[in-house]
Length: 367
Image (tube, rainbow, N blue to C red; front, side):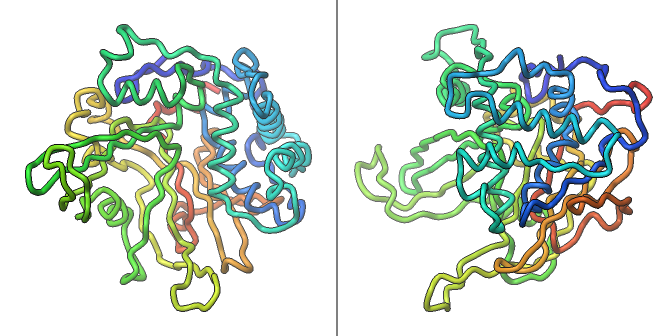
């Protein structure tokens, strides 16, 4: 067990049931008809160290929830894919069963049309959480006496968490302040990824620029101030109230063309520079929550996966860049093909979703 952002996370045991093999984690995924978007996400999840160990060691079976919409089937199929990817026995595999089950619950992912990898990731994480949501949230006081952020967390998950939620869900604090009287009103919302805008006036930018755009305050008109009892100008400011162990950052590359007569989507091709190590998120933590998140002051997020999109909305292709912990190297996962990648090539204008981890790293010799 480790403490991250002031919360206890139960991590899998430090051993794997599958013995070391040279090709472990270097297996490709067949394209089943424009399923490159799904393959990209699965490879990034497969390289999420403590998540894949949770499935490889079959600890998830102790927490299966059969009383929800997906009845634990998504977790079982994801586990089966990750196991196959890490046996080291196959050059590539086909995730037909997972695709079939996913298509049963969301038809758009069962066809042969190209889909959005971030949309799939969001739904998949929600399903995995729901399939494993059997862990009671422990609180040492009544719900009414909890700080507002913690109360919102418990209420959002209805009193039960999952290992997926403990690893990859965070919380945003939205503060609205009346310019006239200074009255503040805060709300809290859980998230499994941060979706960031890209600057429209620059072909190159830094991740820090995108984060600043997201977290900087904005002036809003017509806010009904509960103290002034009238419509007022207010400042809305977003901060992080709970940092996740696995931080997923999504770039909003696709947008509706405002000049088109009908709905036409275009893609922003900005080159975004982002750190492979030492991403510091502490400047974006809400001041009121820094005591709870103080454990992260001396810790940094490290990149281990990128879901890339090449081309346009109408004709595109997804790949994944992932850092394989067993080999301590970066690899390119392009459907059935897996090849080594120089870390200097990880940043590109194709980067669509970034996967960062703040969890303690494992020594490959322990595996």
